[in-house]
Length: 498
Ligand code: NAP
Image (cartoon, rainbow, N blue to C red; front, top):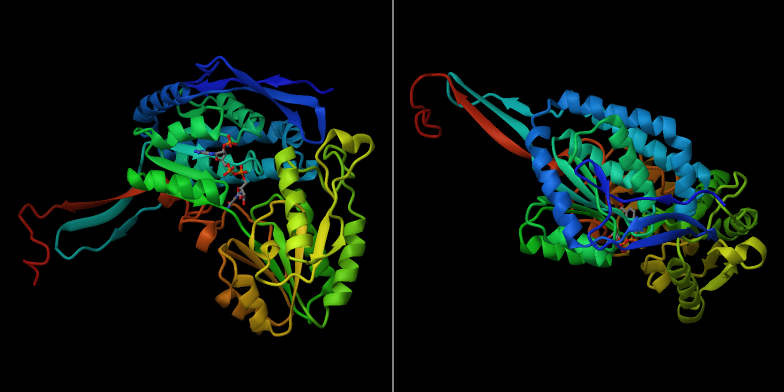
């Protein structure tokens, strides 16, 4: 068995046990004999200590010139590059996705760090002419203080990096609470900050449950921002709590993403996209393709070929390079997947054309493996077409007119990612205009975001903020408008010059 790693909380530049003294262990969802790591089961007292450290560190970190902060982030990037393989291997053991994808997750953090480091030499404000003579006007970004990050398990390093690097480059300090299922990956990420020589208190990690550690963070008066990625249920709960005390809150929530395929599309390319979108990360991406909307003219041939390809996907332990799809992240997630399969078959009365079962026998018995699953005959109002499964369960819907396909795509409470396969440029631009989603891919699957373009969704997927790119800086900084009057006399705007 590979080694079990023991993590503590990281507070004020030190690895410390939690105030409770309690610990818990996490096991590999592909092999439950493998204890990947143990972690602190913390409570509000640990949050208190972490916030105090972050608040103290903010006093000096905010004064470090932003290009200097960028250089420090660059050192984290160098550590991550060197440790890419070992942190990716542990990530696969921790949450199951295949090694090629966990390498991608770590690479995303590297990319995000490089982008944020460069931002240290930009963080552009604005200068503009003003109404009066001998007067100067500009707007600059100020840091906001201590920022809290509450993150999910499906992108264990990438998502924390999307939140922490931009917060840090803006001059803020951070307290992160990783998902209970994936603190080891975040612990490895924090180790990179430690090795890079980040000053004590600038980054802090407290592990433990959402209803204890997460709640204490949301309620703490010295945490000035909460950035959350996770389920709609928890996101909406926290939005209410933050709203009640006027705490800015950024939410990245669920999705019910769809891929439309027109009859003029390159069918093989669209099948590649659907397979990767639906079954990559075992369907556990917020941007996963969970609905496939096929033109009636190609529906049957497309489904036949898709099934043939999906049957060849190898399901197994993600550390095996030949495996295409790993396990569900946990027994609970597996149960949710099987529940939705039951709903689709027995309540929705959709047609199960592939998979549908837990995989058992041999090594499968030690993990939470499930077959890639496809339902056809799904109609827009069925539960399988409306509710997020977060597993490898694909709903296939049929349409006859392009406008109808867009209508079906838009007909959910979510609006994260979307995709259209067509060779018709006019249709492509109509889709870009009419699809209600934060992201639209043309001739690409619903997954594949890059760190230098805004990321986020509309409708129930979020609350209007965008992560990544230049847009995220607006969450982690506040604008200050500055007027400098060098006329030597009182000048009254809107009065003297009218
Ligand atoms: P989750 O259950 O909502 O948990 C997310 C985080 O919130 C975890 O750290 C969790 O801690 C914490 N939490 C739970 N209850 C809390 C409370 N009362 N107060 C404060 N924090 C609390 O979501 P998940 O199962 O980890 O992730 C899956 C969901 O995330 C899916 O819906 C997926 O679509 C969404 N997601 C969205 C995006 C996006 O960018 N739009 C990206 C990835 C994932 P514990 O782990 O301790 O429960």
